[in-house]
Length: 598
Image (cartoon, rainbow, N blue to C red):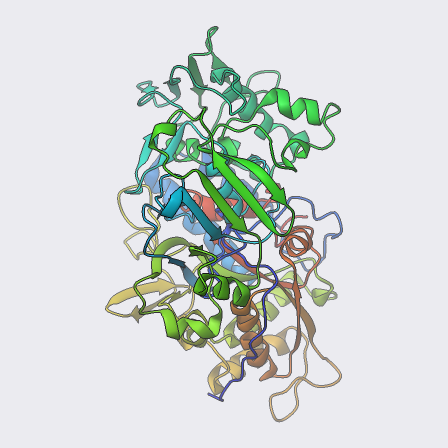
């Protein structure tokens, strides 16, 4: 394999995710160095600027499969349906897995008590720091602070500072009651959950917070006018609906009890009760800021908005800094020792790292790519597990596929994927032990029956098995063998010839049938380095890939609106079930960046 040259660039916006998507979503300050612990990435429902292409795959079967999975109560049958859905997804070639996430950060040794979960959420609230004040960088300017509208991991980390849900995760990664007063009462058929609310709950402005606020907030998430990317989680949770279309949920007359009715049992119901999209939000403040309902996020665009979490946002200089101060009305305020958290808003990982080195910052969520070898063995450098996948994604409606059949377009995308050297990306860009990915559903995700989803068994066998370290890995291809080798170039050439492309004798695309493609990424040394690696791989057969790196918020909106050919993506799971990696690709999903069915 030929030597590579990767040009180090300064970052603009980092993705922490990613999501996730937050979260599932993704965040900005993502572990850039870890080649982007971004996680969950944010995508959207819009795609108004794209039009359906004749080369796009028919997506009705996939949408139907997701609905079947939602309603299937036989767990063995449900697992089989999820395998079928991932088969369909991977057969399009539109999703190009690169590696499974881990996360990195640096934390001054004088600071303790930070913890994170597998989904990329970092919990700062119960930390200790000198003078009870923490200076940190999590990301650059957040896209949304309204928890119903956010779909990035950095946004989720801020949401759990500002707001509280019925449930939360503790330092042991276990679900524990938050606003709920103990465990809910569950009906024998698993269709009804009744929560007692903690007594004396208050919003940060001192007003009463009770079950009525939860009812309002869950119905707001489900309302199409809210335009929440995560509204599809309502169906994922199997929430029942009333005849008027509102959710079958209710508050007792005194607001002390919240009751939820499901259409089907949901094994991860409590996980979603800890997910920010389901956190209660203040109805009065929302309706005052947006009386005509045309700007649902207007109430949380500046500092001072009402919340319910351990901190409130007291100062926000956009694109520069945010200050959070302890909320005395938080139900567990006595356990919060920090008085203030100051966030530097930046995606310039060199500037962030320098601020950490000179003591201006005590926590950073990204490290310049070329500094990873220098800090990886330091006792203030942390590598933590995540449950998610870093990948690239094609817009199936891109003009790149004009004049092709759906089968030819899929062959083109598979040729691209075959030429990408994932092992080199992990070893030379990620550098923190990431596992190259041969599936979209991440390694280790639960199957809902006490086992792991990505294993071969009597009912399902993946096309390929290989070794990763001392364990057997399975998937749709062996990621350790991808890249521009002679064999892969020959196979990629055949796939592209089947799609109508012509080649010269030296295995390069003919001038008569060129391929020119733009790759969209957010700024960040690791993301750009991954893009440059792919650019060189694809050039092995004459594909001309240009790289367009954008600031975080611009990138998020271009990607979700389908303004790209090929884009950087990342998804940190919102909960530990494969459906979370599959439901995002429904046509109606706000996170369907590939524009399937649109």
